Length: 352
Image 1 (cartoon, one colour):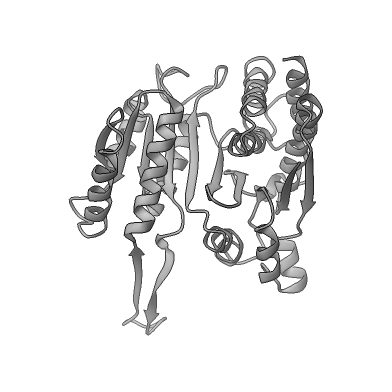
Image 2: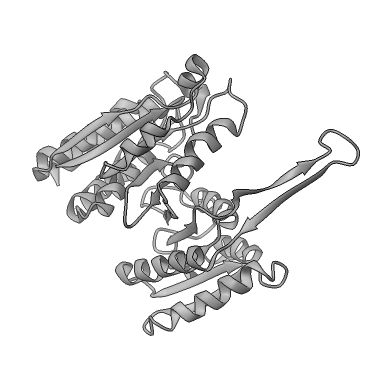
């Protein structure tokens, strides 16, 4: 029995989660795994209705779950930053979900904008530090709204936070058994304080993993090589800000937001899994959004829970849908509705 907290969230989030839970039911039947699901009303609608964002009591409840499954957060009538900081960042910080894990994997049947590259070339993972850096919220504003305004945003990097992120990356690389290479993405030539710490910790931890190759690249070079030579990469580890940027680039080269999923991981606690495409409010209620990213997030959740066979078969079912069924990953252009795509994943899962 696994206890799962479900947060449908805003916009198309509920539609995506609906299809993910449909697949989860099929997993339960096929593998004889029990899931207790508890839904939470968090997001823009609740905030507009009650003024409440994320009660402390709810955070305490989440600590008793095995995993969290999120649809999307973001509402067009709520000022940007309120929900993102009040729900997403607060959950990451309060639950110490210090790893953001983002697979970048091109499936057969999916187009990439990179010429002459295929699934054999695009298969790497970004391990992003998730609770420090520029997202820690350190800094402030002086004389706001005047000609003398000063805004300061500080990047906080602790030895503990940096080292545990790097160690996770090396451990994950061992499990992947792919190219056995971990690449540090940084900016040591300019951000000399923060990335001096990152670089020293990276090579010190790396010496504990003699079978894994260590490499370094500046973030601008990473962006270039992700397009030019994505096959070079296996596991990339980086800080919060750079990770946020390069993972969106990764989503594009794997086919778009419709397929990209991520996990906010606390290896010793509760982790949260989500599609990374956002709430897409213009498509809400139309049954046209692509649910495959949410279903891939479900696969990541199963893997993190240790249900490796179930996770693998969910991913294989998604691949079969991509190869055999979809005209496009784009919302409204798939050739199927949201609910039909979910049904197709269930169909392939049952047939495997």
